[in-house]
View (tube, rainbow, N blue to C red):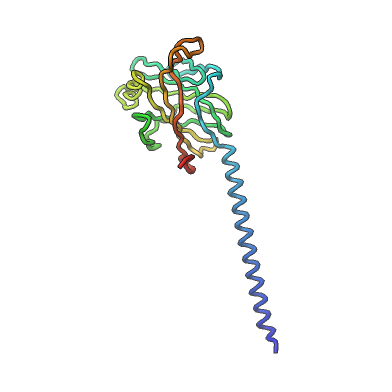
Length: 215
């Protein structure tokens, strides 16, 4: 004889299993879609700083004590006066989102490991670099007894020095450190055939909140 109660229970169990599988697949699909949407959103906000183009317009930058400096596209402007190092770097944001600069650090050399974020000097004002546009980063070292001052003075008297710039996106996330190298330019390649002053190059990028851009 057919045990209708058993068949009913089996049917209920089978239906519950199918529903559970369908719910699991639907949840996985929804999670995958959410992750893709989040990645697309973050990609639209992600900045990346590089040296600006030589064709970019000069920028005039003011320091808090009223000092002004002019930096050409693709270059850095450096001046040492009254035991203070003044530095302005002309940068360009090649990313899709606005870059907000947070701080800077001068490592002892270009091969030094990345310093902890806590050792970076916070900027005294917010500096924004629009997407696909030029901007600047300014550094003032006013303590002649500091390691930053010694590193800058040593580099200025030699082949150059390195500056690590910390920045992020408009939401305060996706923090990146880009390592810029400032080096004397060769003679005869300037805008008017004279010395180029201080050239600006970038050597590495570190993602602090995302996987590394390279292995």
